[in-house]
Amino acid sequence: MAELATIARPYAEALYKACGSDAKTVLGWLDELACVAAEPQLLQFADSPKTTTEQVYGVILGVMKTVLDSHAQNFLHMVIDNNRLSFLPEIATQFRALANAQSGSSDAVVYSAFPIVGAALVETAKVLEQRFGRKLNVSVELQPELIGGIRVVIGDEVLDTSVKARLEQMKVALSA
Image (cartoon, rainbow, N blue to C red; front, side, top):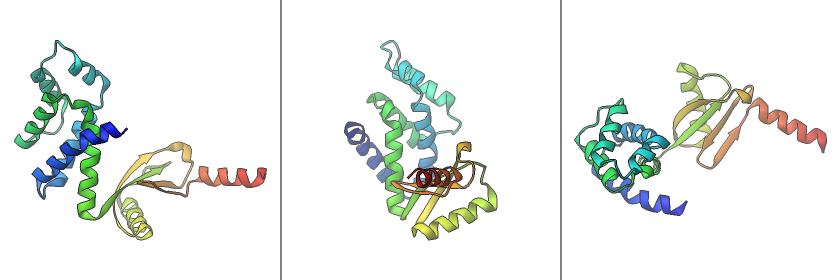
C-alpha cells in the first residue's frame, strides 16, 4: 500500500535522524510499540470519539514492558496526536530499513521445524552471511510443517532447504 509507506516514511526518517547512533536502542522500543499498535482492540479504542489522546497514551504505556525514555514518549505522543497509531508497524519497518542501510546489514528470518539456539544459531548465521555476502540480523521462527531443514528469507531472496520443499520438488519431478 503506497499511502501507508508514504505517510510512515517521514516519521521513520525523522526518528532516525533524531536518534543519531542509538538506532539499536530505538529499534527495541519501536518494535515493541509497533506490536502494541498492531492490536485491533487498541486501534478501535484509539479511534473512539470518546477516547482522549492521554487515555490512549496511558493504555500503551501500561502494556509496554520497556520503560520509554523522554524521546520515545515524545515520539509516541506525536504519533497519537496526529492519529498515526496504525502506522507504527510501517514506521518501524522503514526505520529498520534505514538502520540496516546505514550499517550495511539485512534482516534474515530463518524458518525451522525445530528451535535453533546458542552455538547452532551462531553457526547458522555465519554460514548464511558467507552465502549471501553481507552481515545479517538473524531471527528464528518455528514452522513444524517444514519437517526438517530451514527456509531463509532475506528481503525478496529465499533459500529453501527444507524437507517439505524437497518433497514438493520430488512430487513435481515424478508427476512430469
